[in-house]
Structure formats: C-alpha cells, structure tokens
Image (cartoon, rainbow, N blue to C red; front, side, top):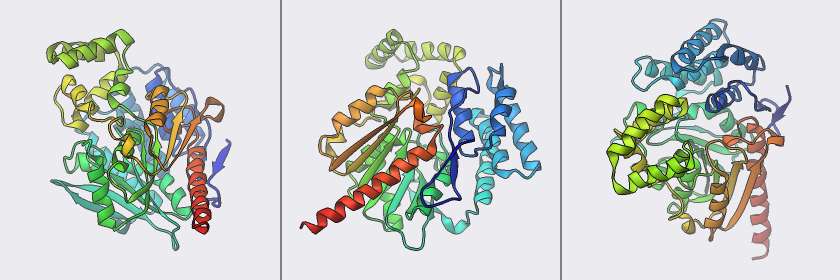
Amino acid sequence: MTTYTVPTRTTISFPIGYYHLHSDESVNFQLNRFYSWVGDPAMLDEMRAVSAGVSDYPTFQRIFINLGEKYLALGETLKGATYLRLAEFFLSVHDERKQPIRRRFIQLVRDHYGVTPENHSQIPFADGWLSAYRFTPAHPKGTIVVFGGFDSYIEEWFLGGFAFEQAGYDVVLFEGPGQGTPLEDAGLTFTPAWDTVVKTVLDYYQLSDVTLMGFSMGGGLVVRSAAYEKRVQRIISYGIMTSFLDVQLRMFLEPVRAQILNWLNSGNADALNSFVQEAQKKSLLLEWVMEQAMHTFGQQTPFDVFAALQAYETASVSPLVTQDVLLLHGTKDHYIPTHQFVDQIALLTNARSLTARAFTEYEQAQNHCQVGNYGLALREVLTWLDALQKRDAELAETR
C-alpha cells in the first residue's frame, strides 16, 4: 500500500486510494472515509466482502457491530473503534444503542491516541457547552482551529490534528452546536451564526491571529465565521459549501428540485412533507439525511429542514471576508456540486489572497473532503501556510 507521510514527520501517514467497496455511492463513500483514518489494507477486502449485496441499514449495523467487537477483543483498538463508529453512523437517532456506542467510540480513540483529560475542554455556550481539544508543541509557529460539518465527530479527526501539531502548529479541534457532544449531550442544534461559536472558542483559549479550518458543511460555516470574526486571519474551506440547501436538493432530479423549491417558497408544507416521506423509502441516502437533518437542526419535518437550510449560505457574507483564503474541492465530490467551488471563488471579492485547489481522480482525492488521499490535502494546507509566512516576512522587509 502506498502511503504519504506528512512532511518532517514519520509517525503519521495516510493511505492513498479511493476504492469500490459497495454499489451504493453514499455507503461506498462512508466505507472509504472511515477506512482512511485507519489504513489497514486488510479492511478493504473485509468491508467489500461483508457488505456485498447489503441494502438495508439494520444489516450494516449488525455486521459492523460484530466486526468492532471482534477486533476490540483481538486488541486492535483503532480498527475495532472505527467499525463501531461505522455501525453507529447507520443507527437511527432513536435507537437505544446509538449513544452508548458513540460514547464508547470516543473513549476508545482517546485511549488509542493517548488523549488525556487535560487536552479536553467543555466550553460554556448558550444553554450548554462546546467540546474542544488542544494539542500544542513546544514552540508553535501559529494556531490552527478546526471544526467539522454535518455528521462528523471531531475525535475522528485526531490524526489530522496531530499532523498539524507535528508540523509545528498549536491545534484546537472543536465541535459546535449540531455536532457531536454539544448536540448529543448538551442538546445544542445548528446555528448559522457560526461566528459566535468561533468567538466563544477564541475567547476561551485567549487566541488571536488564527487559521480557521472548517470541513464538509464547515466549509461554508468557516466563511460565515470569517466575515465577522477578524481574529481569524486565514481560512481554509475544506469542502466548499456556498448553499447547504443546494447540496441537499442535489439528491433529486432537476424537475423535482424545482418542485421542492416551489413548495418551499409557497409554504406548501403538506405536499413537500408527503413527497419526501415517500421518496426516502426508496433511497438509503435520503432516509439517512432527513433523519440526521431533523436531529441536528432541531426540526420536526422535512419542510422545516429545507426552510432552515436557507440560512446556511455564503453569498450574503463572502464580500465581508478580508482574510487569506484557501479553498479545497474534489472534482467528483458526490455531495457538493463543482459550481459551488466556482461560485465561492467569484464571491470572495475582498479576500487578502485567494488560493483555490481542485483535486482529481488521478490524485485519488476527487471525492468529498479528499477521502482517498487525506495526506495530499494536509500537505496543501501546510504548504499554503508556509508560503503565507514567507510572503508576510518578505513584505515586512519592504515597510
């Protein structure tokens, strides 16, 4: 197996390759996604074999719970924890097994990576709290603050955070409302005012002059944050998302999208709800997305979800972004249409600098958030940061 090792370090590496593991595009993506944080090549044949022909969530759940327990019993903690997370990913929010498995996954990966209680903070926010981890090298050359998106747990991203730490950066990984622990344990649902979330984190750690990175849905939230929180000096949109509504509508054919928008704009909740409830019986992805969206946004119906999604856009705030910006996008991202990548470039009319990087199938980084080649994406981030430091040092000499 070919691997890419983060520059200057030999202890962290990521597998390269986006594989066909299941016929359902979304399921295939999730299998690749979680495998990419482990990198054990034996998982590829195993996942391909056990999931072949499976087309319902209960079977996926049973298979991956059993595999998780098997490898935990064998002492393979990361692989076992990852299989449990895969099972938990497909569990309904109403399933009584979901929260115990989620908490178990978090503790297992903490233990595996030696993350201590001293690394973790619960940051008061609204009527609950945010969950954050901080990893700081001896002589940091800057601070990177990272958060996720619609369905991730920040603990999944430990290895990415360690790569930044080992490259010399002070690293804060956090979850906000609608994500992970703040959602499940504190009852906080998503807010489009993500700048208030970032402000709370920066205040808590007394940070200024930071690089802020949001991935997946966070690729839109990071733009919304930078528009108003100017202690953020550099932003990385890791998975462009100019409109979350547009992303969700992409699951439907064009005539259906137009009809949904018509029902939404006319307030015809009954028609929209009836249509979606029938449609999700035929789509694993739609079934999962609607339940996850109602849970994370605190909504009761599909109509309410689509109405809420309208606030998660970047067109209205992008001209307010004056920082250095890095945009990362996969050319075959099955969630985010490429026009959003192009649109986001055009919207950033006042950025101090703008770098846009599109990843291709040749690079095995073509899909969402560069699943298949995390190492390449992290290298781009580190190279970009180094270039900005060199630029600023050169410009300082001319003043």
